[in-house]
Image (cartoon, rainbow, N blue to C red; front, side, top):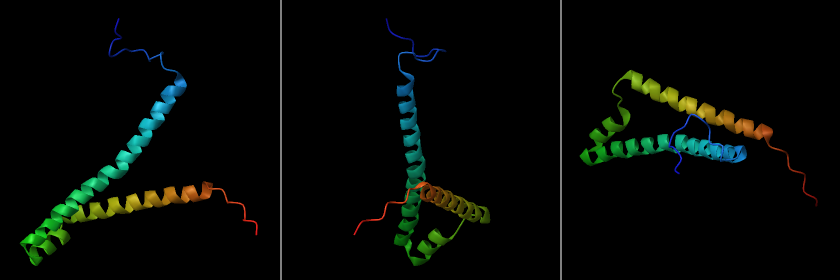
Amino acid sequence: MASPLTTDQPDRAVAPAERSIARNFLLDRLGSFLAFFPLGIWTANHLWNQLAAFAGARAWEESVTAHSSPASAISIAVISALALLRHSLYSFSGIESATTPAPACM
């Protein structure tokens, strides 16, 4: 007999430790997605803007330096600064938790 696709009871056939491993795996993949997805969007946008070079120098300069509104320029600056700040704080927390290696014997 096949199991129903949805139930209101948790799956007891899988051990809690295995569920924890699966949850950690999914969280790690979500972290990778959140890191690379914005980078992919930025790359696509960057390449699209660079295509304006085929229309001449003036069109290229307008494409890469102009913003549709001051709000878009400010939002890009704030988002970039927050991402840099988050990355920096994460890196510093890793430095604090790292152990100091033992000195090498000569």
